[in-house]
Each structure stands twice: as C-alpha cells, then as structure tokens.
Image 1 (cartoon, rainbow, N blue to C red):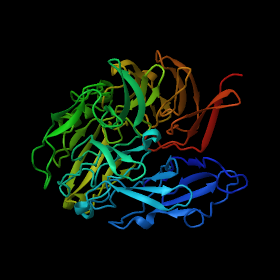
Image 2: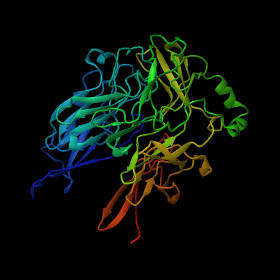
Image 3: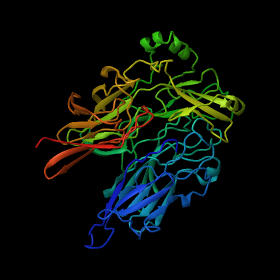
Image 4: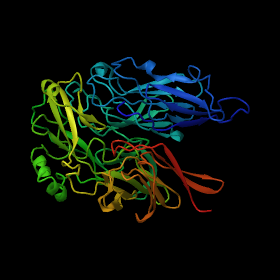
Length: 516
C-alpha cells in the first residue's frame, strides 16, 4: 500500500448471547498484510475459536498473480452470521494482479462459506483486481448484499483484457447465503480511466410518480448517481447507452467500448458537457501556463481515452472521483439525498516502456508515475496546477448537493469547505475537494467533515445553510457517526487525514453533543 491506513472496525453479536460465554459479541479489524482479527467486545481478548486463535489469514487464498498481499483496509460487512470480506490492492502497478474476490466468512468460526470472483476464469491470469476495496451494503430482509466492484488491471491500458468482464466496475447484487449473482449493472464498460466504484451503494425506499420503489443509489467517480430497483437492478429513471470518444487508434492493442451508460436522472453532479473552464487568476499567476497546458492536452469530452501524445489526455472528473468513498446520505422522511463532490482536473499520459524507463519519475498518492508492469505502457497522472500549486480550472473545487428523490431534481447545492495552500485558507465560496461523506440526523441536520481545511460542519437538510463548524486536527475523511446515549444525541468524527487532500494526518477522535 502506498499509504498506511485503516477504514474502521466491524461489530457482530449473537442473536441470543449466552451469559458468561466468551465472544458472544465480537469486534473485527483487518490489516494491510491480509490479517483479520476477531476480539471479544467485552474483554478485548482474542476469540480463540475464530480461525487461528482469533486471526484469519485472508492472504492464504491469494493464489493467482500474487504480486501483493490482499490488504484488509475496510472492515467486513456484517450480515446475520456472515462476514463479507473484500480486499485492497495496489493501483497502477501491474497488468497482471490478484483477481478480485469477496469471501463470505462465518462470523464465529472464521470458516470460508463461499467466494465470489469478478473476473471470468479463462482470463483471470492475464489481468486482475476488479476487487471490492470499499464498504458494501446489505438488504438483510431480502437476503442480498451489494458489491461496489472496482476496475480490472491495469488501470489505464486494456489491451490485455479486451474480452468482456461484465462484473468489472459494477454494482453487483449477490444472494447472501450462496454468493450467486442475482443481478449486476456495469457502470463503465472496458474501464481504462480508473473509474472504479469507490463507495457502498445507498439503499433507500422512495416514492416516484406515486409508486413506492425499493431503490439503490450508486454514486460514481464520474459524478453520476445511478438509481435502480435494488431487488431487480432495473432502472428507476432511464439509463441510456450513449456514444463516447474512441481516440486516435494509436494505443497498441486497445479496443474501447463504443458506448457508456449515462443516467437521465439525477443529472450529473459535475458539468461534463465541455472542457473545464480555465481559472483566469491561476492562468495570470502562471503567465499563461494553464492555457498552454490546455492547448497541449487531448480532450474529446468525458471518456477521452488515455494517449501517449503531447501532454496526454485531460481527465474530468478525475480518478480520485467526483464522489469519493463517503457515498450518499439519505433522509427517509423527507426523501432527500445528500452527496458531496470534488471538482478536480487531472491529465494522464501513457509512456512506451522505453520512454518510461528514461523518464524522471516521481510518485505520490493518486498522482505521479506508475509502471503498469507487464503492459506496453507505463503512465503518469498529474493534477492540472500551475507552478504555484493553484488549480488551473475555475472554482468551486467541491460542493455539497441535495436531491429530491421523488423527482431526481437538485433541491440545492453550495460550495463545501475551504481549500488550503501554504497554510492559507482560501475563500469558502471556492469550496474544497472532499474525501469522506455526510450523515443526516432525524432532526434535519447534515454533519460532514471531508474538506481540506480540517473543519467539521453542520448544514440544514432543507436549505443548505451552514449551522455550525469547528476546527479539528486533520481532515475528517471518515464519515461521521451519529448516535444516542441516555437520551442525548452525539456526533463523532475521526480526524485522520489523507494525503490526497494534503500532507496532514491526525489520530484524533472528537465527539460533540447536543445541549442538555
């Protein structure tokens, strides 16, 4: 893993706990080297009946293209007595990588019950990933678990995987007891943009045209919200296949999909209809640097394929995502959905193996050079900034959006957070890129961290008005947790930070309470 991290813990308890017996309540946490720990929630001691004295080595099942351990960064999804375990890999490094797998584990014994494979067996050895590295969702009443499946490897060239991989970059619903596919919708065909599905779908019951629908909303990096019936996978509002750019044919072995799916409602959260407008202030500070960059980038609209020409291809939305792993919050009483977005422009260039070997390579978190070892091309991905680090594109750089789920229309939208550079906070009207998502209370309050300025905030669900804010130790990139204890309501944030936003990390848990 390029950055050490952990995305939380999971909790399970027996339906009828036996008094005095250990591990009737269990906490699970994974590690970057593929270990899953089970601890008694009351005593903190290992659950010795779980796997090997309380530790399950998930990496024992890493048998194809085992280039790296199956890191357990996200906590298991607990459904009844099942633990659903996905894993995280290493982006952009290899053409052939471990193929995406989700394991169903018995919550008490650690025994494997079934496995789900996203990549067809006949091509599994020459590609990889299409894994589930983020959280999953479950409809326990209907016996379904929903997987946000990532893209196959390598990320920016697909000549090794021109065969159909229908479960790649998809939302896939499985039978919780058998692991069999009930339905699946692919949101990017032949994904060569690293547009992997990065957040758990949100399950919501909505009323559309007077009809009650058990719905699922899948947010994507493209800034799309795909809304389907969660029992069948059928469209709630039409999802259309539309022609997309096909490139100049100069990339060896590549075979792009002629169409991609586009939702008709809700409308895209970002304006993908034209090249992002240059920010005049950044262009002036850079003495025309942004304009020159725009002139040297290939851009044919969204889904412009990677290229080896010029400075490469402009990518908007970027690979970090219009919507990140926080996903979509939902107010079931008002039927309003809340989602935060980032507006970031990047550009990607492919390098032949010879040119890549000669390049003066640097790398960061979600940026820089990466080898795509085993492919004919390495790659470089950069944020479109001027020499001072100012974004070349016009703000806002992040927004929070409210949608009326009766109609799919935007109710309100506003910049969220403030950007920060060299210790200075920018005007809040410019907004901030965001990582992490919102939580909504029954009283109609949105809580969210997620922004670059390391503040946590509260907004009105109805109007979007900012109600409150406070400064914390680092950007709170985990979703807030809202809970009640002895009649008083609390909201908790973890201020951990993430270097995609800025080089600031923290180890603070901060909890706020409503007045007594």
